Image (tube, rainbow, N blue to C red; front, side):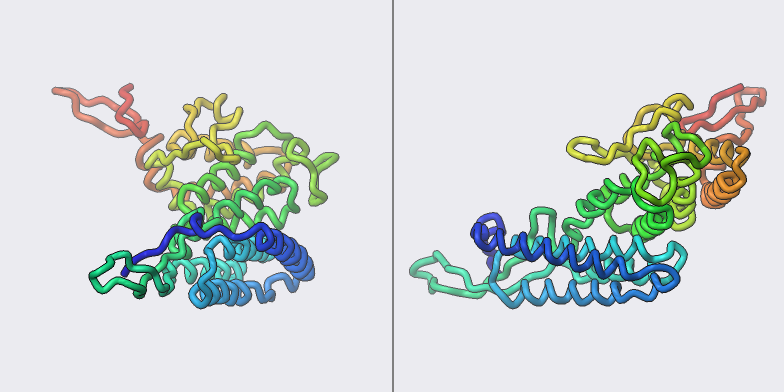
Amino acid sequence: MSSIPTPDQNPISPTEQASLTRRHTAFITDISAELAQYNPPNNNSHPFAKKCRLRIHNITSRYTTYNRPISLYEPDIRELWYMLFGAARITSADHPAQDRLVAQVLFARGMGTVRRGVIVSDEREGEGGGRRGGEEKAVTRDGEMWTDLPFLVEELERVWEGWLGMGREERVNLCAFVARLVAVGIGGDGVCRVVVRGLKEVLEVERRVGSGEGDGDDGAGAGEVSIKELIPSVVPWFEYCGYMIEGFAIEGRSFSEEGEGISTAPGELAMKGGVVPTNGFSVARWGFWKERLEELSRCEDGEVAEVALRAFKMMKFWGERIEAMIGEKVTTSLGQGQTEGTWSGEGYTLQ
């Protein structure tokens, strides 16, 4: 079947764009108000997983039914992800409702690339030309709908910009949700960058340990937030996608920082700890995170120490492959003698 021009060749009019903007603003206002209605202990009984499923169907149905440019549906897709991440923020980190939200993303991706039948002109004059059936893929500015989950990463990064200013529970809930996405392979490098940034903000940035003026759930600025407020958000990373993080560290997975608003370069504490600059994961960085958590588990603040110890144990639980690579004495054969060494991730350092 023939394909028709890409969406950029079928632009929407300024009037349509203005209408889309007004509708988008109204949706964000309405859904934000609805999300705000769900507070503990009823925050997990919300209908947003079902609403996301219905919205996925609605967008798909409208695209396949009406021969309108794909750009008309970009606000709808962004609104879907806004609602999804908003629901994640109010859903308890350890509640099955989080899994139901993840299932909606898997459902969308499982639909594959949406196509619709169209009538296109056949330019083969004299060969039975005229008008014939063709096929158009739903290709947005950010990939194919739904195979590439367009705009999901952009909307996550938009939400993440306000992460430090969220309440403690919101931060933990959002981290748990993103960790679940990583665990099932959703989002690629874009989502993984958020993982690095989340760990960096807590473990690699110089902050006071205990609570102080400006701390709490009242939206304190980034420079005001203490370890005590942030340390609970570390646990979900290793609880829900610890095995994946370990694998990324072994792989040395790194990201291009060009054009990205979320920096994954090592923080000041990591640099002082000897972590070689890299925009991403590494065995050395994993080791630093673990050492930092162990250090915090011995601090005088009992609450911080308890949570840090839990995160440390999670790292130990999921870090068996790295444990086998670093910090263990091994015996190697050199000629006629034996010597001990330590595995550094790139080879043996002999002692």
